[in-house]
Length: 359
Ligand code: ADP
Ligand code: GN1
Ligand code: MG
Image (cartoon, rainbow, N blue to C red; front, side, top):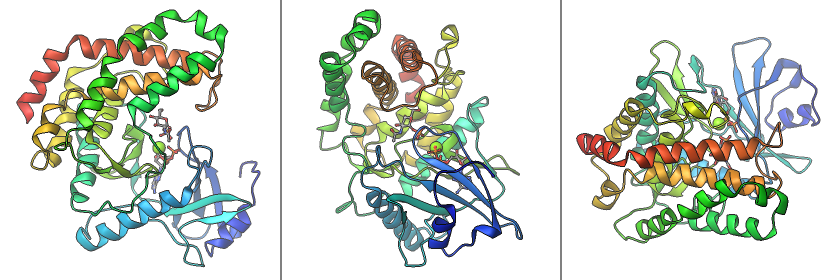
C-alpha cells in the first residue's frame, strides 16, 4: 500500500466496493491522470481506478459521455469488439465525485501487457491496426452532440497561437537563451498553413479519433502478442486521422522516446514507419477519402511539430503543463522532437514512396 492523500474508502464505496477487499498500487506512466491498479485480496478480480486531472480536463463528464456513447454504439454494432467500458457507480453514474475530484473505474483487461518503446516492427503494425480498427468500427457513429474533452486539443493553429503568446508573455531569460529552437518553430510555420488547408477541405472528414496513440495505450495479448484493445480513452472524440496516424509516426518510429537526450539516435526507422502505415491502413484503406489518402505523409510532420511546439511553449511558460524532473526537461523534449521532425522532412520522398506502396 502506498501513501495516499485521498479517501480511497469513500471512492470505492461509491462503486459498491469495500476497501478491505482490495490491494491498490500506482499503475502506468502517463503524464496526465493518476492511475491505480486495484487487486482483490480474495479473487482474481482486478480493476483500473483513475483520477481525472481536472486542470487538463476541466469537464470530466464530457469524457464520460464520449466514452459512454461510444461504448453503447459499439455494443450495438460491434458486440465482439473489446472496448474498455466504464463501470458505473451505485447511483448509476459514470464517474464518482469525491471531495470535488472525479474518479472512474474500468475492468482490468486480463492476460494483457503494454510496452513503452517499440523494438519490433510487428508491434508497430499491431498497435496501428488496433487504432485503425477503433476508427473503422466507429465509422458510422453519429458525432452530433459530442463535445471535445479538451477544446482545441489538436488544433495546430491554436497551438501556434499559444506559442506566440508565450514568446510575448513567457520567461524572457529562457526565450533569449534558445534562439535555435525558437527559429526552428518559426521557420516551419508552413506546416500550420498546410494543416489549415487540409482541414478546411470538405473531403477531409471528421471521425471518432483516439488522439493519444502512444504505444503504451495499446494492450497486447500475453499469449499471442497480438493487440487486444486500446486504452486511455480520455481524448476519444471527433477529430482527423492525421492525429492518430501522426502520433504513431512520432512515437513508434524512433528508437528513443521523447524523453531521450541521446540526440544522435533520434531518427525515423523506415521499417517501423512502413509497419505502422500498413497496420493502420489494413483497417482504414477502404474507408479513407481521396483527400485523406493524399495527405497521409503530413500526419507525421503535423504531430511531431505540434508536440515539439507544445513542449517548447511549456518551457517558455515555466513548465506549467508537463511534469518535469529537471528544469531543462521540456527544452530537451522540444529538441528531441525538432531533430525527429528534421529527419522525417529530409526524407519525405522515401516515406511518400513507402506510403504509395501500401495505399
Ligand atoms: P495514463 O497514460 O494517463 O497514465 P492509461 O489509461 O494509459 O493512463 O493507463 C496507464 C497504463 O495502465 C496503460 O499504459 C496500460 O498499461 C495500463 N492499463 C490501463 N487501463 C487498463 C485496463 N483496463 N486493463 C489493463 N491495463 C490497463
Ligand atoms: C500527454 O497522458 P499522456 O502522457 O498519454 C498528452 C499528449 C501528449 C503526451 C506526450 C491530454 O499524454 O497529448 O502527446 O503527453 N495528453 C494531454 O507525452 O495533453
Ligand atoms: Mg496512457
